[in-house]
Amino acid sequence: FTYCKTLQVAKNVKLPASVIGCNCKGSCENSRICSCAKLNGSDFPYVRRDGGRLIEAKDVVFECGPNCGCGPDCINRTSQKGLMYRLEVFRTPKKGWAVRSWDFIPAGAPICEYTGVLMRTEDVDNDSESDNNYIFDIDCLQTIRGLGGRESRPLMLARFGLVIAFHNPWLQIVANSVYNSLLDFWKLCQSKLAHPPRRLGDVSIPTVHNSDRPDDQRSESVPEFCIDAGSMGNIARFINHSCEPNLFVQCILSSHHDVKLARIVLFAADNIPPLQELSYDYAYTLDSVCGPDGKVKKMLCYCGAADCRSRLF
Ligand SMILES: C[S@@+](CC[C@H](N)C(=O)[O-])C[C@H]1O[C@@H](n2cnc3c(N)ncnc32)[C@H](O)[C@@H]1O
Image (cartoon, rainbow, N blue to C red; front, side, top):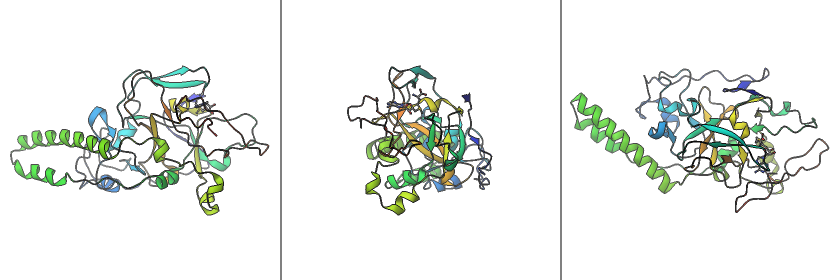
């Protein structure tokens, strides 16, 4: 396969035009002014700590994009900054290749985007005898259904208090910087207490047996687009499934707002010690995968988790 850092788009897929962005300069700081922050429920989804950490798993994260006034260091472009940790591909006895980090990874840190060829699901070669194990269905609508409510944001009054307290510009800068650190810390504590890092099993495609699902819901949930990392992709294609994963999938919209074509980015669900294998929940519905002969295919799971579901599909 060919390594590609960014998503490639198949010829018959047309990405929507870029949306109008925010008018912020440099880095987006004020969530009451930044139009991208407003799309995230009037707050930034990330804190600055450790180079940017997602506060909690969301339906969709709206990041700043090509038409925004801010620059590449904006906190609201955290998932666009490339690899932050030294990742290693290594061989496992039963699962083929796998990925681990040489560095400690804090919960909420972005790991990598899932790159490959963005294509129509109907164009995936299902008739081929050779399995393509590197297809990622873009199924954010399922993710959205699986997520609950949002946290409240009670700190705005405190910030206003600081803003009016200091008329001296230098004091104002110091106060804002102290405030931002405290705010970051508060947000992380808040998300940990009220919303412990959610694992993909909780936030993404809920495993619903086909027989339990009404027909309309079934047809509705067939994803239109997928990312094929079989011939082109990045390190994400080597990350294995686990029934008790330490990463989760986050749908991200930055240049356009079509959720069917959202970017797929993996984030740390926990603090991850160096050399622990990275994994996410592939969240297959059992008995949902069929071979070219129409027969249901089964794949055993070797994740080793105490609550392992025994099969990937
Ligand atoms: C996206 S690839 C992951 C990288 C793959 N291990 C490799 O060597 O290239 C997905 C494939 O890895 C294997 N795999 C991933 N997680 C597994 C698990 N928990 N148990 C068994 N096989 C797994 C399966 O063959 C699956 O189809």
